Image (cartoon, rainbow, N blue to C red; front, side):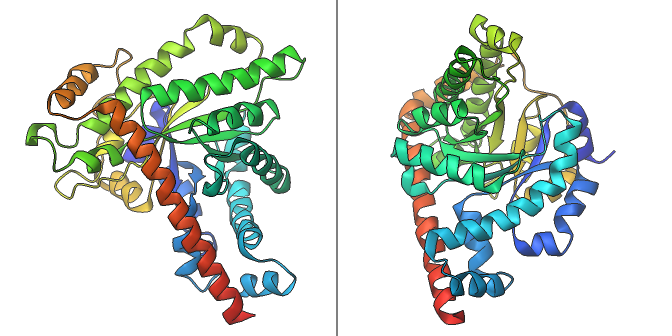
Length: 358
């Protein structure tokens, strides 16, 4: 059995962290679905910047949209929704077969809105309604300003992928925002069946401390933080608060492991897939990691519900001079900034193409 199928059968969803028009046109995405058990897809500004700026596949559509008055951000979202709508249709059978648990694609609001609650809510609603796809997540960052936007989006019936989470504390706050939105729906007699995932970024932890810790701690921080987050996530599902919502028809906000490509060239290329196997969760990975795991990945066990040795490992990092909470805040800030940079590059690429082709 292919390792990707074994992971799927364990109960973890494998999503591809990539989308390009070439991937859709060439049949590559269909191959991933058929041969690698891929059941969903995520995107972000960096992915679309690479796709649009480095490919001629979008040129004709950029030219057409520009001629009818689309520019900048509006033009980008039209291109993105064209791709994501096609992908959403490909995953729709999975979405229907799993009773809306799986088979999602994700589109991020403008990263320029990461610290603007009201603008984020307005954008999330607009994109969700415009796409009109039952299996679309709108990605909203779990920043301080993003959390009330997540609550409001969920209350409004918008399915949300909470992005830029870097710690158990971040994940718990994202879950709280999700539950607040559901509780408001229940209080008004609305269905609490609005779906969400919470995306915790993994490999960026280890990249950040690669040259700052002793050899025995290398490539262990992201996994320890993820293990702690999974333990606390499972505890949350046992809480009276969640049990009440579930009894009324709510479904859990699933934990999603993101940024799972290995950044350390000395580490195994399947490190964060093998270490984070867990039922009822998601692992989204770039093509290279998916293909590597499909080729030589191994499943030796699953994440333990009690967190295993995560607290001992985190304590060892603190002893080595790494403030885990401080680094989580730094990584979230840096992550938001990196997406802004990609967004600006993306809009510049679209402007350049528009003028050249128009």
